[in-house]
Image 1 (cartoon, rainbow, N blue to C red):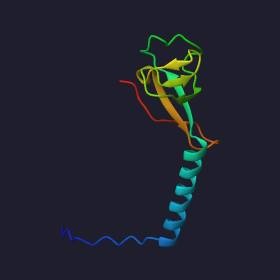
Image 2 (image 1 turned 90 degrees about the vertical axis):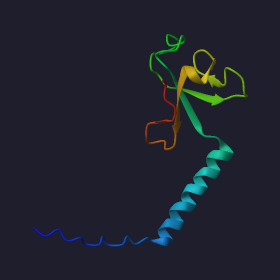
Image 3 (image 1 turned 90 degrees about the horizontal axis):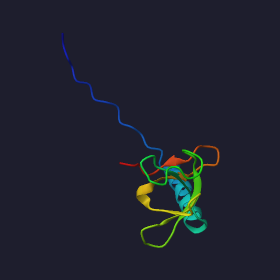
Length: 103
């Protein structure tokens, strides 16, 4: 059996489409940066606050000034980052994306 190595074809890049895609991402970043990113949190099962509110429900939050309780919002009003998982909404038609994970 002969195992002949064949070169893989080179991938072509559509530079115009790449520039268009990058411009769209940059425009979205500007909007989110200037008008705010929609953030949500869910209380982690291991947190002492787990019984607050509806179990495993997402609630809108924002990040407050530095300190121990920087996640603001939800049934308790404020949480430590170690007590919640954070989610970001990137598209109204899709479920929020989890961006932090508990240990």
